[in-house]
Image (cartoon, rainbow, N blue to C red; front, side, top):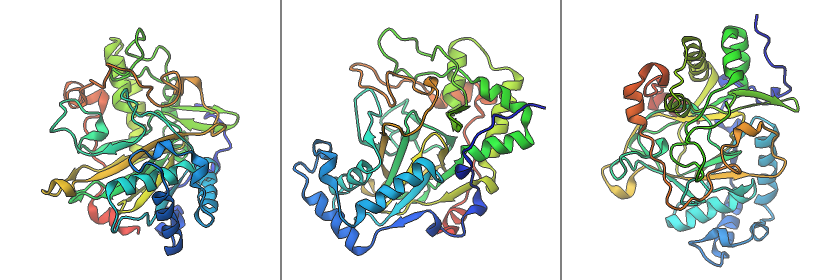
Length: 366
């Protein structure tokens, strides 16, 4: 019998039955707090560049203490919180982004999300303009995964016409369930995999991580996870190091447990909702979606990647670049064709995800 890594991350080990309603994990802004946030936005010296204002200037007497408590919940509690009620009525996109930025500044410092150095990301379907978009800039279903950041936030400016539900799962619960149901998978997941860097690696660096990146690791008693199946499969293909049947079985077991209805939460981010996620303990996913025909109504989430000193001790292999995030690299861009990867290697990649989450299921827990 494989010995599972012991850990003391029990607070992060939740499942669907852990919550009776969304109120259990939501921070809902009062009218006074919403007004306070709007005043903070109005006080920015440059609305289109909220990053130019120091974080200390974003203090709000009513809302800031609640956001600091929410940060502790993300760092050392359940690992996520949904902030509900950001201003959307009577405001433009720039004002909404600024409000997202101010809320995010209470959780951590922004990270570059791509080689352009973007600190603010836009989660939209860009597949019509870009033949090889990063996966989040398509309308494909995405299985539970983690990004190369410490925290991620997603804030809803517009929902899609159908689909586009958010799905989250506790990596700690997945680990402990695998130990119970599929212990033979754990050695392969502890060993880890080489990850393709999708064309965003540093000049002179190899296109695939030199070291294996563990799916699960324990540091200072804390269990953390890093998982993005498509990228690790692409990495092994680039190295001509095919995944063996035991490794594929381990990945399948991971996906099976992480997408099981009893282990996940599925819900819609409504306009003005903003989820904050501990990227080392909570994985996120989404269902495929169809946009409204009007371009101005297309699904649009605003994304931040964040980190903070002392947030969590994780293996150095989790940091793909010089630091968390994707440093700016002029002349570089993501080029990995994920749709082609799914077509070429449906067994190892698992193919395009099918979370089996309907809109009705995602609307149930509100």
